[in-house]
Image (tube, rainbow, N blue to C red; front, side, top):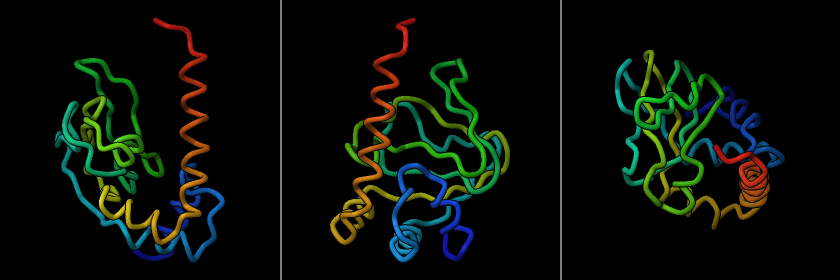
Length: 140
């Protein structure tokens, strides 16, 4: 995912908000584009978490068993927990249309944080925000 489109999309991802354009370009270059056909499993629940995914084109569904938890399109992302802790995925993600994702592998992520530690702060803030929201949600 090179070019201004990649950098622009990353600017709208909460994990990368607030970092300068030069660093955002370094982030974009650390990942790669991967294509999926409709019906392809992008990631499987309980599979090893190998990366952070940003949807560039198309659409994916996040599924827990037969229940659709979310539908994600351009500019939306998943895999933010697994890229950090390497734990198994918490849901299946399936392409529902021809889809392109930008993927930041865990090993690239670790190097990116070492080279550009300023990337870590927006990520930590977003994770805390999500944790607080999950903790305040009613249990179903």
